[in-house]
Image 1: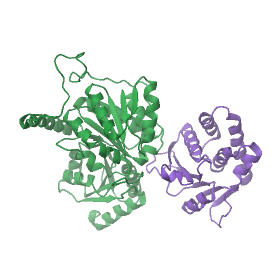
Image 2 (image 1 turned 90 degrees about the vertical axis):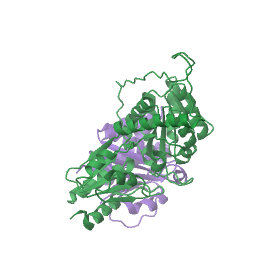
Image 3 (image 1 turned 90 degrees about the horizontal axis):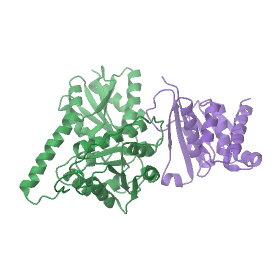
Length: 350
Length: 181
């Protein structure tokens, strides 16, 4: 199954009822897949007139209590930032997929991870966070969609699933779970025309009085600290005895897994930590690992974005380096291995 | 270490290389192995040259793109010129000599057959040259079983073309045996 199709099928199986979106490479097969698949199961696919319209349609459907999603790539996701801030402010659950491509600007359609800052540090205005998940295989793309919708509903917060042009376009075998059960909890806050609730349900992010706005911000702050406590997820790979730990997500983590194998075969003790949740960042796990390793190398398809979070997590306990390729370029196993050797011979080996 | 093969299928848009890549990847899964299949897309795919990449392994596949192919199928001169130098030194080069005329001396094993011409003359349709070449590739490299390739092929072609495609596969398979003999 192709990565884009896997996300579509994962969304259908997660109970996604509405999709609003606008085509953009490298995620167009996802809209294509859902345009065919959603009506088959009696649900709605709508191609909006723009990304701005898409995200606001998502706001509407989510406000009415439905599982809803949109998807795009860098330039389109940028257009959605205002809407994402509104969704976060109105505490509306939804899933947004970003298949990152080379930028900035119109850029190109090659794979990239340069939207890390935009996704994890805001992107839109105001104090808010998206929950950000970064799968690294086509199987995980399917499986993570259920988790994304569940997290969105549980915390009433937008969730972003981030991958890149390679993951969108590549095909891998996928096992679909036919015993798959979804359980959607009631949403007593939704504006459903008083069918399910007493009194008035208002979906809103506009609080003219600062005291009231601050109250909402307190609620959001408590929610984010709960998410931060509960939802940090990462995977470790060959950390036992590792002096150098690579930190990488998505496509870069696949490359790093091969680097770890090759380096270990040459006697260099390397391991890897793969953040699966980018926000909340797995700071606790990395912070603990920092007590027993010599240094970290953050490998990213960008100029150095996640490396800042790695540094915050390590908190000065070990040096943190960065290796990246940008603008749609993908680092090769050989390049990263060279970098590892350079660091190893430069001190981490002693 | 896991046994891994990197296969690059290249030619011109319309020759069915992406289709061949899909069928190969599908067949590999039927053999119970792992595969990652990628293709060029967007403007790159509209520039004339077309390619499909298939990585096959009995272990996990980390890096999803082909860097140094073990097997290269080139069905156009342009694709040959672009990718031949990337071929691993112990690799296998399969060319459609209908379109690839200029082949410099090389260390790698070369199998040249006029697949497009043969498809046109023996089967009446040049468009199944991709399936012929795929049959030859499978027979020459052993990366996939004939049974799996056949069932993958049948599941991915339009209805009514089963006989034509089956004959193309058989013919391609046979050319490989001749070339190897």
